[in-house]
Amino acid sequence: MTQDTAGAPRHYALIPAAGVGARMAADGPKQYLTVGGKPMLRHALEAFLASDRIAHTYIVVSPADGQIDAVVPPGLDGVTVLRCGGATRMESVQNALHALRAQVRDGDSILVHDAARPGLTPELIARLIDGVAGDPAGGLLALPVVDTVKRAAGGQVATVPRDGLWLAQTPQMFSYALLRRALDAATDASAVTDDASAVEALGLSPRLVPGDPRNLKVTLPADVRIAEMYLAQPTTH
Image 1 (cartoon, one colour):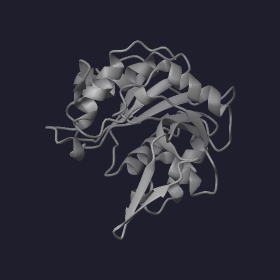
Image 2 (cartoon, one colour; image 1 turned 30 degrees about the vertical axis):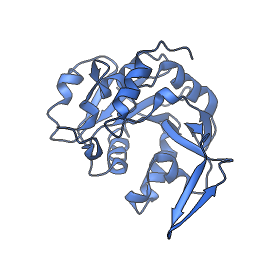
Image 3 (cartoon, one colour; image 1 turned 90 degrees about the vertical axis):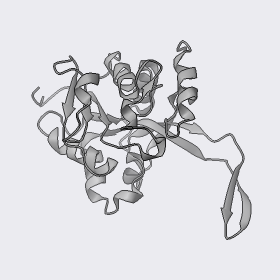
């Protein structure tokens, strides 16, 4: 794949999948945990492969990953595995962006998606792309907070106003140039809990596009059953 020098911006998916999933208490990385009959990573990948808005999908794994070939067979059309994953999610995305320098233009969009969100659909991908609509600050899928929020600190409990509070989801979409600049400027990887936080640190405000509860992140063992419930339902977006 070679870099085009002209034309409308293209959209590329990037799935960092080099994590170990310590909170899942599983035998291996949680992206390979079977949910709804297939590995979580495969669910996420298939959503991008089924979308006609995505030019190509890249999956970032650790150099020593021995499971990826069973989930993403070599030569599968529309996807490339990058074995440049780092110690943190931020480092994995950074490494991938550097590896893609020759394939993408500065104005092309990168959609970064958590491998542990198996409920993604082509409809949600299209909603994000259309919702961001060329916003120079990019944007992300997110859900407004509907529950009452409490803060506990120093033995005191207080209610936090939920107006304006959103729960971030993925994909999160930014131009290649902006995402690379934001991550390269970040000095504390632990503070970059998602790509949008790095962009916000530049003084920009990514657009929030309404997501969907089915696009939850599987973090704890109990989340598996919830994800399977959503996966068993037909998509109606």
